[in-house]
Length: 412
Length: 154
Figure 1 (spheres, rainbow over the protein chains, first blue to last red):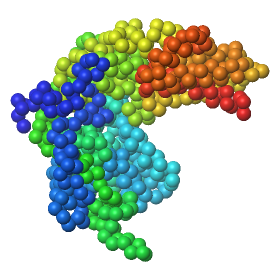
Figure 2: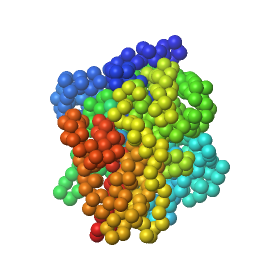
Figure 3: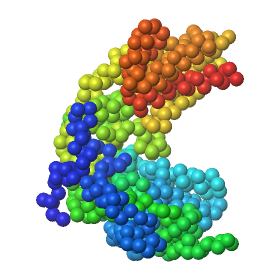
């Protein structure tokens, strides 16, 4: 898609929430790493579903049930194309990325891993890609090993071959939600496969921001959520390689995931429904489908280009204005990072900083960003995190800088 | 700082910049409890030496935002030298102030104003009620202190 089409000012107008003000100031939304705002077409389509075709999916032999089913399955095909998977059967809808990772932990790992096996995690993982593995290792004798990081928050792969010895599963995030570091996932997948390990990629912070190609990546599982990519909350995706998914036992039991049930037992349904017990979040799935079309219309390449340009502007401008008073953690080169800016400003506590920013309508997140092990490695208790998306522009960064300056006055 | 005057009162900023009774005490004789704010990762360590049911010494360690640090600092001043029962009573009044709804603030203000010495500096934290997320910050040190009182009494 050509650059001229990409105009954050035009895009901003498509997001109704961005018209509101906060504390008498126009809202400056810089928390898209937590959740993105939703374009009007996503919101309206979900409303339309309830107004016009609300019916439970699959099995209903009447018109509106068929329409609803078709929209759900059309979204599955859209996701399949969006991430370039081999088959739509590889697309499993979950309630979020956390559930997707837990599905792998409960179904694949608990049926495949035994005492003495090793799971390798990167030190940049979100709690959602740490705790499910800790839960597993508290049940059986499974070692959890960590890939260390460099001082600027990049994975230190010097000893990766050593670290991979005996590993059965490598879990790595494509992009750090706390620092914005973009990880060399393809390289890691190759290294994992060499020792016969599978690789699960947390793609929550990458699918909204740049092209995802699971075939090129070569991974075995990826998990992501809809709400960080202009879709609604309550819908996530697990993609897994067909031959792996086929051999996995079901996760949750109930309706939809069965072919047959007798008083003696059940036969599991075929993929992908084997992993989709119960009535799915129909409106949310449809909303995700609209969100994907919306992002494709803009173009994932154009989105990455815009965010990289804006990140470069932010790094440069904030450094020019605040010098050593402001530390932006993580990789310094915009090529190595997404639009996540994890900030420490003088000795102003991030909680206080975000409180003052809120007074100026600026929404940022303060805290450990669900990455406590990483924060400890970085020697940080908390940071204030500003994260960029398609509707942000340079003026948002300017307002952020002005508000940081005001916080400095209060905590002088 | 339009609108934030209720939160960042001068007395709060003063306690934040110059925290009272900051540091550690040897355990034993001191009892130490640690409290965490899962929202922001702040942690506070409270050290207390109790003799004959009187709080002889108290120190605060750990790190946190201005509200949690100032509140803990003020707490040390308000309970030092008091009996356990007196300290509990201060805590009860502080909790009551923190649980008053924002809409009740004006009426609560008048009743609190009638007894301005009841909570001393701590009354400066009244404005926190308008910022519900920060109430956890203001009560972190207190809840941790309360655990120590419980362990002494049981």
